[in-house]
Image 1 (cartoon, rainbow, N blue to C red):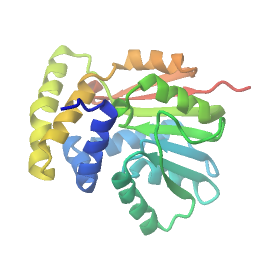
Image 2 (tube, rainbow, N blue to C red):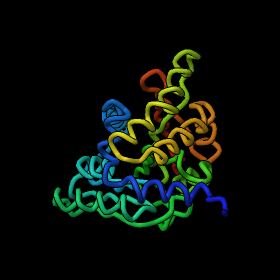
Image 3 (cartoon, rainbow, N blue to C red):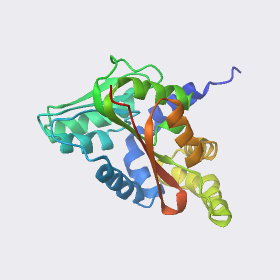
Length: 237
């Protein structure tokens, strides 16, 4: 049997778990992911009228939060390569009646936008699932305006050895079990353990931000280092 590429495997996972994805996020992070995002949004300092892009937007939670911040004079685009995940985001848009939100089907490795388009480009718990982290960061850097910001909220690697062991135990054993119990998807949630285990630590990711051309990179760890925010700026012309 032919080996699936990372991209094919991730696509299969998200096409399958989309209906229960939001609920599972809250269960497996013990509701922490909402608090982390709130803190990141505070640090971003989004203004009314801003144009923002949410890459690997999934079911559109961060996309919709950004839409509230920029208001009707702004614009928000949520982009994802899973049509099923996008269908959940589109439902949220219709329920909210916010006309300044768009959802687009597309690939983070090759963003379908011109250079220098957005005030903010975000990616929340999606970078670890792409085939090439640096390529996606370079694309995010390309489409953000000079003076704009690229922001990533993602799982990270805890620094305390004891906490790290507990974290890996949870990801490897408990989380797939939650997936089986609450989403009937043991294998898919096992994959999420793999993608988190192999993801760079915060310093390595900060170096990648710089390699992608971003400056003034700020890092904030959450909950003992299980997640981290990276925020970088595109140099003004």
